[in-house]
Amino acid sequence: MKQDDLFGRAMHDYWTGLGLQKLRVRTQAVKWEDLPVHHFFRTWEDFPEVEREAIVHCKGDVLDMGAGAGAHALELQARGHKVVAVDNSEGAVDVMKSRGVINAQLANWEDYPASQFDTVLLLMNGIGLAGTIEGLKAFTDQWEKWLKPGGQVIFESTDIAYVYSFPSVGDPRELVPYYGEQTYVMKYGTTEVSFPWLFADKITLQEELTKLGWSVEVLVEDGGGSFLVRSTKL
Image (cartoon, rainbow, N blue to C red):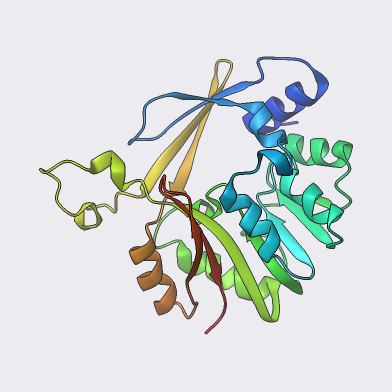
């Protein structure tokens, strides 16, 4: 496992009963917060409504991109779906295999080859993998390569406008750069990594994905900023 695979080390340490078992995360908008690793090992009973709805709306063969420790892949397998669970963390992929995920693969979304899936699943703010609004084009280009004709993408996004909800800001969507384009910093022990991460609001997603030739159907909102979208090629 690579030294900078903080996520994988955290998953491995939790699964084997070793280590700190707690990640710390922050963005420009949010100060350091604890992210307990057991959250990535939750089962159906502990899934929030957004994730339950996502599972229910999956159809056919599923590509779970950014699968983490395999919580959603295991639930989908139990429901009879053929699932390929992909993550760019070697440690996370090893844990998924140990937990019983039948087909867990190590890859970045940019490099994952053309496939034939009925559903692409992107949970835990999975749209964030695009990194930026501009990055949505490359991301959606990959969606089209992964899907069968008529296939769907089920993804979660989070609107973090509440962080900017004070009079001096006005409409946060007018901020430059876009307020949802954040640098996500993850810390485990004494080591940190950072990467771009997108938190997109519904209006911006509707505008940008429509321009790129994809529909936006909001399936459910949780009242705390997170919402679930089904997207298909227009």
